[in-house]
Length: 143
Ligand SMILES: [Zn+2]
Ligand SMILES: [Zn+2]
Image 1 (tube, rainbow, N blue to C red):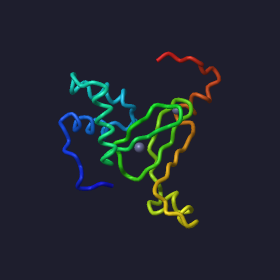
Image 2: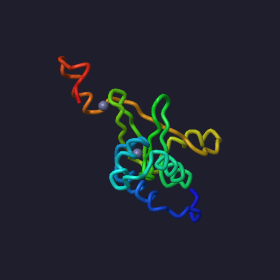
Image 3: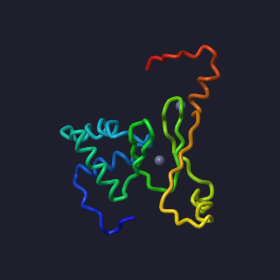
Image 4: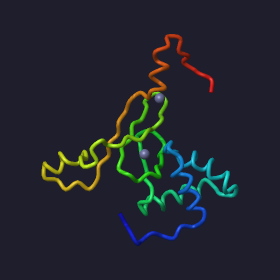
């Protein structure tokens, strides 16, 4: 983590970071743009993208890349994992019960110096599980 090398946040970047940290939904850039635009009506999607890249380079936010899905962003830098619902696509934070144990440990025991890892859980969220128990579940629910 690059400490002391942080670029000075522009007012726009501050707003983007504030809003991202408030959202627990791990938004995509365009989802975040919709929220930020309420405070900065003249901001463009491109500006939001660029600032997210800068914040990620400065290790202020996390970037979450999934195969075949839009990149999402996370303002929570605490050690945690993510579980993604395969039904509705929502992402929730999972905090390890034992903070000292990381998925890197077995790899370190094998003699590797671990420089990073990516752990992603999949599952069906409580909301979707509830829907599955109803036999008359509509395949095309209206929002
Ligand atoms: Zn779900
Ligand atoms: Zn998260």
